Image (cartoon, rainbow, N blue to C red):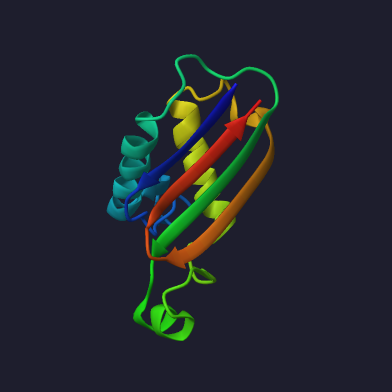
Length: 131
């Protein structure tokens, strides 16, 4: 099975790893809850009818709007995003939401994951999953 889609929206910049601490441990702050809810709303629209089985390969390309500097320096062309949030924290949140939405039974099934982060004219997320 193959799942491919592009969803146009402005991706959140907050990740689950940005937690606050209290005496009983960590908790997800408000921006983290909003980010997770945003990813859930986007990914829920594209979830498969049944969880994928077996090994899964995943590619995710996330594009945020250009900054004034990136647009001016690159004449509006896409430019790699080298600021926060970093890719490994982003992919963790996205995989957690995909697991919650039953894209697969367990995110341990994902044997290969690629994430690209860009600034570009059309913000959004492109997802390609195959098993």
